[in-house]
Amino acid sequence: SPELTYRWNQARQVTSAIQLQADGVLNLRPIITHVLPFTSAAEAFRLCDYEPDATIQVVLDFTK
Image 1 (tube, helix red, strand yellow):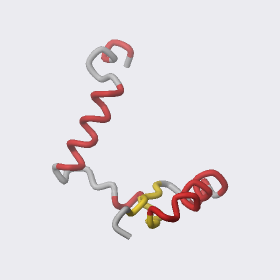
Image 2 (cartoon, rainbow, N blue to C red):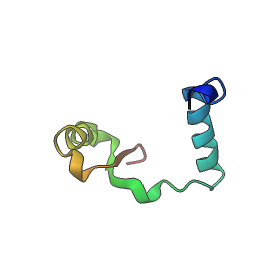
Image 3 (cartoon, rainbow, N blue to C red):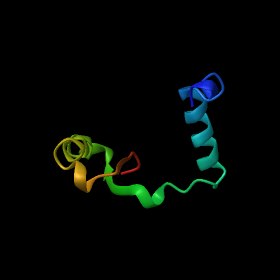
Image 4 (cartoon, helix red, strand yellow):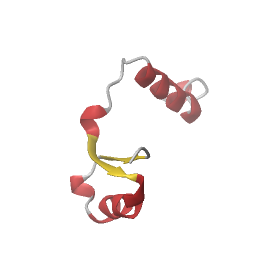
């Protein structure tokens, strides 16, 4: 709503979403379609670019 944009700008929306996720209120796990090691970052981008119907959220795992 245009009359609320001064209160809910993009920065506040992102901050609120991150906080809700950190507090356990917002569960984003169901939308993760792929988890790949960081070394497979090129494959992650390929999936997003060439298989958008099969990818919702691709996560890079930096621990592997």
